Length: 189
Image 1 (tube, rainbow, N blue to C red):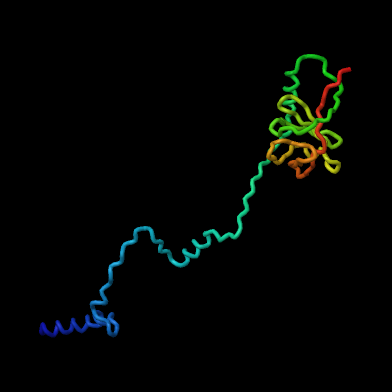
Image 2 (image 1 turned 30 degrees about the vertical axis):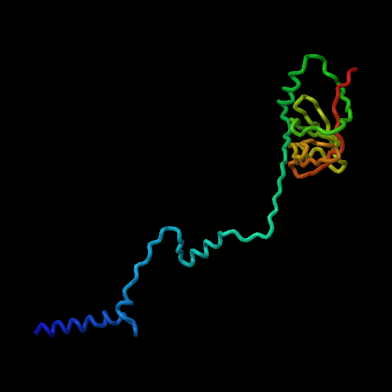
């Protein structure tokens, strides 16, 4: 075979591959692919499904923001061992058999309450850190037995527990106002 015929046959086979990619009116200079700028990591090019997934995690625009600050203090019931320890440190003398309640004017610091115990007649015993014992009378509709596992009290600006103002919330769900605070004083016969 003639070398010219071999050249012509191979040129006809390659012609559609070379010229078929060009569109009408396009020159070979425009068909050269342009080099893309390398990504520096700052642009996020994500496929469409991932972009929708990412949009789901963006925070929604809020029209109003409300910030509240509440401090709630938990008063646990005092364990029997703590009561016995308080009594063991007292001087050895004959214990008074009766106690009298004296009305306590004012308020009591919440931080000074060490523990509590329910009493009949809608009252709670409050054991103070300075070894005083107080009784808190609750409003009539409340049962002190709901406070068997302690209570919560919301801290006020002054940090005090006052009768007629503050409400105690039991861990069982009851909410009662403190009607009166009394101090227990031993009566000697």
